[in-house]
Length: 183
Image 1 (cartoon, one colour):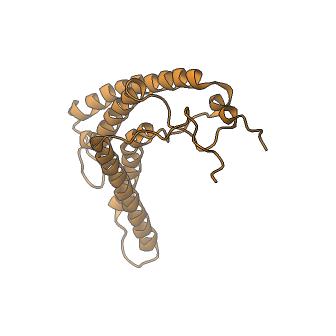
Image 2 (spheres, helix red, strand yellow):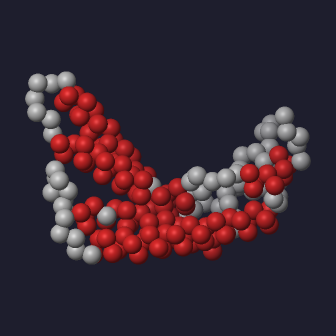
Image 3 (cartoon, rainbow, N blue to C red):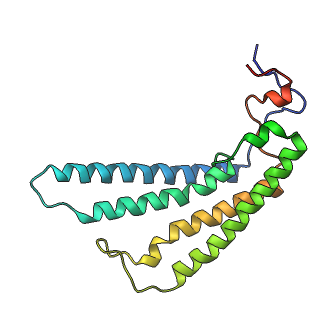
């Protein structure tokens, strides 16, 4: 018998639309690929230090860019699944309506910040900076394309959370709602 049987107010979330599931899978695949790239490049750098050959400078540069790209490419995924960094103290203090209001407000703030970041990223991508990265000679404006896409997706996912979804995903166990005593 499960510890927390489903109640009328604690029903499982509706399945996500196929387009959203595919977008999440693509975001996650990009994140995994970037994480693997960073790991391989750092291992390559560590190996080069112990070999009697000259190291490749571009490995460190690409690993640093990959870390920035990883951060921004997964922002939309984390916001869409409500897995980003949050303070869960409010969950214990407020009822369902209060949680819904806080969740909408938080998503609107994230969307507003995302829109401002998008405007800045558009300026960086299309501003036409003549600079390029030192080792790889990638135009600096091109390095901002992945962060631009990430903040656009983050903004859209936050707006969708606030406007379209009924509320935050249900938690596995919330003593304040089930009436159980905390142990």
